[in-house]
Image (cartoon, rainbow, N blue to C red; front, side, top):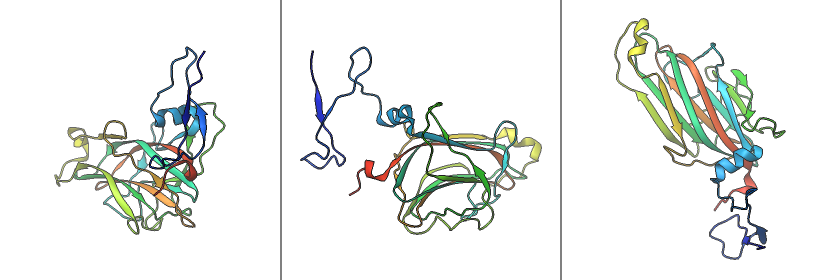
Length: 230
């Protein structure tokens, strides 16, 4: 019988250790548990997902890019941190021309009073009693949030078809309509800490002339004290 322990740390640059010695985790066969940390947190009930549009009912996108009307907005409150793990966008229609601009943006400018359609964050571990601290709004109204393109922000994913091409609405299927970002396949890993008072935000834009479709976003959510900030 062996007893393997590890020096637990919150900040990996801190050589003295933060939490003392903790037992190394293992599976039921005795192998040391080395699952990716984000997947481990998902299994532990710390992963969530939210949908814009469900079943056969899409949401109506904002149309042309509108900075203060994203098509999906996650408000991250103070003392909560999230790490986006995947974003999926499916256009059902793009309108009368095929320009599509898909943007995912992280910002320290949050807004808990976003107006639009409320969406429920679902735990990725069915059966977990954990619930998200975040507020999710889809199909945000025009000027429905404080513009997240302010303060500290950056676009970590951009995709789509930026060239204008006038087409009949019946010809949407000649263009790529399904787009996906994954932290494991595409990166980068993005940590969004809920800023004091106003919080922070994750915003997804699906700009097109007259778009409808579906958005699925998943993330890992933990108390901000769990992540290293320097």
